[in-house]
Amino acid sequence: MRQTVDLGYGTPPPDLRRWDREFLWHPFTYLREWLAPEFEIPLIVRGEGARLFDEQGRGLIDGNASIWCNVHGHGHPRIIAAVKEQLDRFAHSSFLGFSHPPGILLARRLIEEHLGKWGFSRVFFSESGSNGIEAALRMTLQWQSLTGHPERHRFVAFRRSYHGDSLGAGSVTGLAAFKSFLGENRSGYPVTWLDDPEQLAEIGAPGDIAGLILEPVIAGAAAMVPWPDRTLVRCREWCDRHGVLFLQDEVFTGFGRTGRMFGFEHEACPADILVLGKALSGGVGPLSATVTNERVFRPFARAESIERNFLYGHSYAGHAVACAGGLASLDVFREEDVLGRLQGRILALGEALEELARHPGIAQVRRRGFAAAVEVVDADRTEASTDYGRTRGRRVTRECWRLGLAARAIGNSVILVLPLCAGEEIVREAVEIIGEAVRRIDGPGS
Ligand SMILES: Cc1ncc(COP(=O)(O)O)c(C=O)c1O
Image 1 (cartoon, helix red, strand yellow):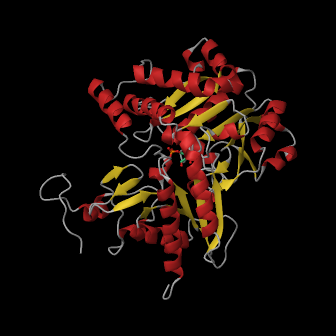
Image 2 (cartoon, helix red, strand yellow; image 1 turned 30 degrees about the vertical axis):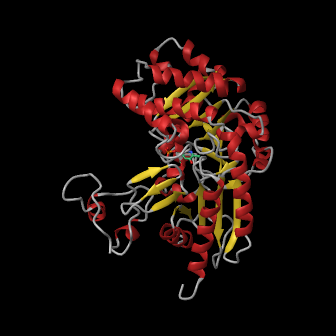
Image 3 (cartoon, rainbow, N blue to C red; image 1 turned 135 degrees about the vertical axis):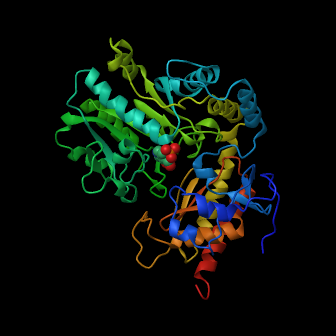
């Protein structure tokens, strides 16, 4: 029986789980399961470091890095102070025809400290990964038109991909589960689909192709499937040969997840347009960036009428508080040598997963850097199943929650993406919990 705990949201304490079922509609959530009275809604009321806490004060490792946004842990004093300071100045003004210090400073530091050496020079802020991608796609089409190629209206994308769920971003997303909304009369951008970079050679006449989009290093939402070595280089060469812009989606892989600051650094192969999101704000607020080189920016800057400029952007684009969080996050990366200290944690994760992979209930373990997936055995396993209809992964994550790990499943894969601040002990504990959860699912009576 749960105790009633005063969480400071009024007296008497609100009946949160009942009101959740009564008033909310959660994103990417299996509602039938959620609404069943016996389902224990995972309720988070506090975070500290790599752990979240439920209303009973029970600590749970944040194995989802709060949907892949958190990097330095919850409540990092430097980030919290920066956010509070900015809130005291102002929370939000407009970035549409106006500017503000945190936005300017964050753009400058992204370029000067991290991305300028790879040829990037301009930062266009939005407020979600999907909108960062949407901006990148539209920039690409308009750039082709401004530079004399309006016939280039098609994209090349990979089937094993997720780039967001707005109409444009959804139309270059390959995973079937995310496309059902497009239905029979599908609209959205026309796309040439590939399974792997080898197939680039089979694209006969690329004269109508505007851009190629890829998530570097590892396909995250495809349940962490790593790309073969030299995938980026191959795409880059193909794009250069055919007048196509190369778009890289680092909404997930950016900011250390794969062991380097950005995924493309593994192949030293930057894009023309790079999209960042999630961890960009240090995990405290919605923020994304569509980052371009000068070749992409110039035709827009030279356009003589406003209609030929980039007429795109949302009310909360470049949110000042989120930008302040992003600036503090860059400080933390540097001052706490986050990437240096991460390397030992990556080794610990690799070792723990290797041991877990011997368990008969585990079909496969996939990992790149600090991002991993543990796929559980299913009777009719398909390779790297991202079929959301499969329930075994979800059963394991429900068990994980009971054992002290907040994790999310994609199909039959349990996704393990820890905040970068999670030390080796937490890494091992998280993997042990997954192992124990699988044992319980496989146990008698399951
Ligand atoms: C690679 C990638 N691109 C884009 C997105 C969309 O980001 P958002 O959910 O912030 O719109 C995601 C979200 O998971 C992602 O993983």
